[in-house]
Image (cartoon, rainbow, N blue to C red; front, side, top):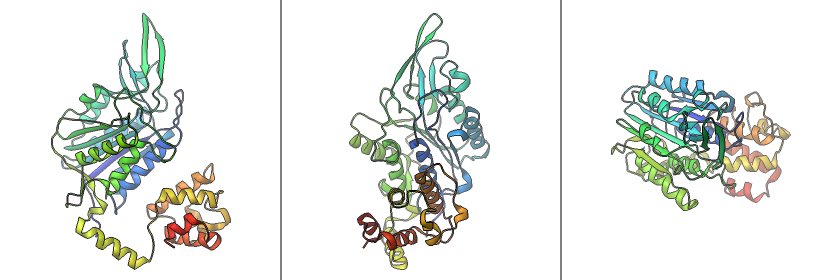
Length: 365
């Protein structure tokens, strides 16, 4: 039976839209959504949904990030485990009075980085206020790789759009502090077209799904997660190397592994679920891709959602059909949407597209 990682807390930030910096598209928002989904899933990480806060795009600001970290400081107890995840732009000012390393909220202004960004020392101070003795910070903030030259009084400062380097050492100061960043400070965090997420976050998600080594205790351990992510990112992208920054040797647990199942229970659970339901578990991303092709106007297209048992009132307005499918399937994965299941959706689609090879494969026929 699935357990709960009841002492887990998280703040998740995903920013793709910026006021003055280059936009990063949907990938950071997908990153945030997908990390949240796995953390609160009872079949995966087991965090209580009320302990996980997510900020996306215009929900994010410098003040909102600071407030979120202060909220963790107020709520987290020493026995808790805290995860802070950031996907978006990072920046380094290499000289001048504002020299430093910054996380970039949507309003970040390179002419006023200290007022509009969160510098590593300020971030470190906020993290130090969190009383939890197990803290994991995941930073996917080195995407752009571009360099902008900004004139400053008395010379020329250099602003690099990246986050990392020696400033990470301050963030990892203290007991049980672990920082995992997507790449070295001089490297890009890659986004490949074949993945919904950045390469780094793709493998973070795979690790949280249970890809990390089994230790027969039903838990994902922080150093195991790093080694899994680093090994696979380097294999996928040869010139990207995730970085571990820590002063602890404690390989502490950060989540349940596959809902806390022990290795001997995994096969039994999988067999029982398959026999009870007669269904095949499908990858939500693959289902989203397929549904966006078969029903391009979204879940209301030919009433496929309601025909499969879904509640139309649960659907949210979206700018595109794919965006509508993303929101609907995310709600479904969290237990919402009505009487619909992934299996009932695929089976209803098969009444119209029964010869579609991808659909047949997802249904296991």
